[in-house]
Length: 68
Image 1 (tube, rainbow, N blue to C red):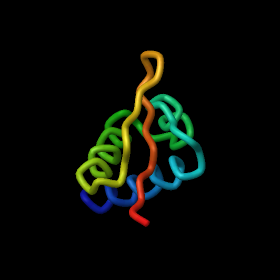
Image 2: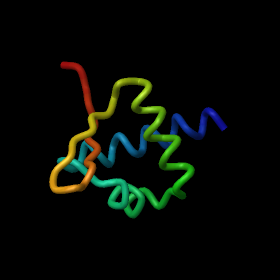
Image 3: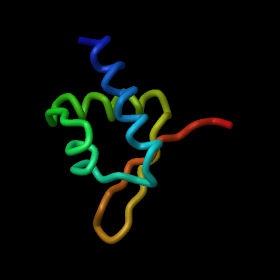
């Protein structure tokens, strides 16, 4: 299970890096992951400090985050 979370997190990170901020629903649509799979992937990325959260007009956006 843990390996699948890491793989899914990599896919989510790629999707976020190809766009400037995606909502949870946009990520779910693009990834075709279940709520459980997507939530675990986002949680993994948050623990690894590879995701930024921002909000605008009552929407929460997720962005990939890299150290340069």
